[in-house]
Image (tube, rainbow, N blue to C red; front, side, top):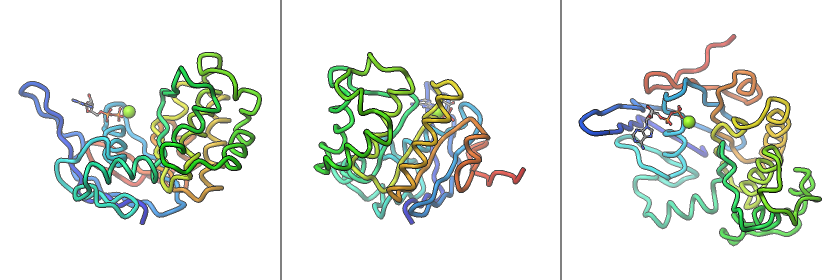
Length: 223
Ligand code: ADP
Ligand code: MG
């Protein structure tokens, strides 16, 4: 299993108020599988994704990501997993403004020591970015920027791709095209995909769907 979550809980405290956002989440994702995570705004989708990415820790429960038990791993091991094993795509494209597109695309893979020029140029070609490599992020449209962010996430050939509403800032047509590219690249590399989305239509394109509500996951009712 690429990802196993069991009994994961997370409570946020602000002042003297405590909100239990995740209340015993169980989840598995196999290698090569794609899973859509849906749920209302504020239901804890991003929180769960952040825990899986090792950006934050659960209060209780077990989280094993690509064979690494997150609670037992050192900070360095978690950082290595994020760098080498996991690709992250967010709603905000988060490109580095001072780097051109070629350097943005290569950034993650270089950090991981896994830059592969042939794969980088194949990615640029698949993502339709070849003519844009010398430009800077501010000179690209939203859809183009998100294609760069997807390329950056896939450049180190991560075993797990985590995407948090990756088309949330794009219009529907552009979002659909970006989504198709993401799914194509995930399939081509054999990565597992956990994607947060508001859209039942996009969720339907993934292998499985789970719904987060009142801190727990439910299998999406079959329509
Ligand atoms: P979603 O991604 O499903 O919209 P989030 O995981 O972002 O939901 O947030 C779930 C709930 O936790 C929300 O009520 C949000 O306000 C709260 N929350 C998220 N992050 C924090 C934080 N760092 N501190 C306090 N509350 C937070
Ligand atoms: Mg969110």
